Length: 520
Ligand code: FAD
Ligand code: DLZ
Image 1 (cartoon, protein in one colour):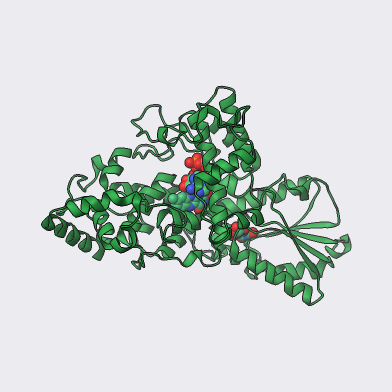
Image 2 (cartoon, protein in one colour):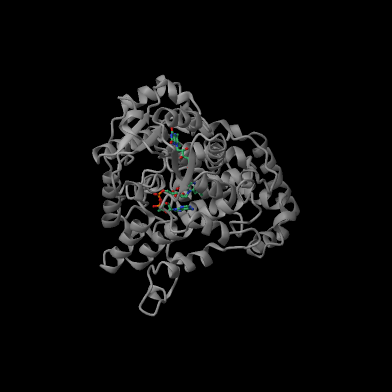
């Protein structure tokens, strides 16, 4: 029986990051609806992805399709080892529409500008040719609808994250008391979230399920998809179904959340995860909703299982930062991807693909990223991103690296974080000052300096930690662009006070470092 004989009136496309079982599409069964999911080269090849990212997305897509079929829905699934996977998405959709005779193609709003434009243009063409009608519906995932985000963040309106976050807390009645004031009398407990970790309490055990995806990995390899990073089944722990994602949420909330606040900004050579939730993949593929995660964390506090600074700190990441960067993305695309405020042009050193640099903190963060397609926020921002900004790496090349390597990287969230927050390449649209530091900060928040080949105390000479000279030269080099910023006045005052010979030596050292980044 062909799909035509089943009388399909509508085809509905589900993208790889739209695995939301609570979407209203699935609340009732309609035998006239055919769901389409596809593993396609168009999506695997727009950037080179980490092997685990491709495996995780395909495994989660397959689990989602199987769950739909189990519920009685009809699904047309294109696997990566089928010849169709080489076709553009639009052509596959046209074929299915022709084969089924369906008159309507529905799709959920894509989170990425590229795909949004592509599908929009495809629907306009299909409708103009009289082939079928296209209809975009909400993905029913975020707190802030896409149009609402676009109008809130419209050009000329400057939204500080903190202002946005407070408004979100009020609008969605999160952590508010009976008088609609913030619980604990404070909106933000950030100042309590900056402790270094000395090994106590111990890093939580990783209860995530271990998956063997070797069959899927062979299919990906045979299809010729180019990836990088560790594909090893032995290291694959990402949740690939809603059931697994819920278990992960529960183990985080019950055993880890109480310490999240304290060690949110910590770095450690002995703990890769520290007290982070590892929920970003499940959230960004929509297996979990942000509302249920926020509600579960708020409940943990209400029931006395987590301190308020931990719960507030965690909720701020999701209700605040996650929604905020999405607003920035939709308000500034297209164009945000090409910002380069400092005109930084250096290539990424080769060790971005091997982790083989002698800077212990950078090596650990990159090696971990290659091993598990994840690094926590401070590794992404204050280790890798900090180095990239000080060294003058090209922000667009860096954006592509971040977009490829992390399990949770989808452009709507990765791009503002990399180009805006981490590289200040938008000139301060998102961040109020560049996130840069010398070795002192890295040493205060972590323990990598102890066993590093470089010396955190030295600024010049062969053994000096590269972050030191690079830090001062960054400020000197960008004096014209940054000196007026009141948040960094202190750095410029220190530079002014520096003895000329000390300053010259620092500048010379930094220029030598930047001339041969591969040697670090
Ligand atoms: P936790 O530390 O447990 O935080 C909980 C949740 O809060 C995360 O799962 C995430 O959904 C949300 N969150 C926290 N910080 C942010 C933030 N700055 N922006 C948006 N959401 C946030 N996050 C991504 O989801 N995808 C990315 O591609 C991504 N790229 C980044 C690139 C750079 C340069 C930087 C500095 C940060 C990036 N982040 C990205 C934000 C953050 O680092 C990750 O969300 C986090 O490390 C994911 O691990 P986790 O789930 O254990 O997070
Ligand atoms: C990231 C990704 C990859 C690697 N592969 C697919 C795929 O084969 N099919 C698919 O539907 N989605 C994939 N994705 C996720 C999409 O790129 C994602 O939908 C967009 O980035 C929009 O956020």
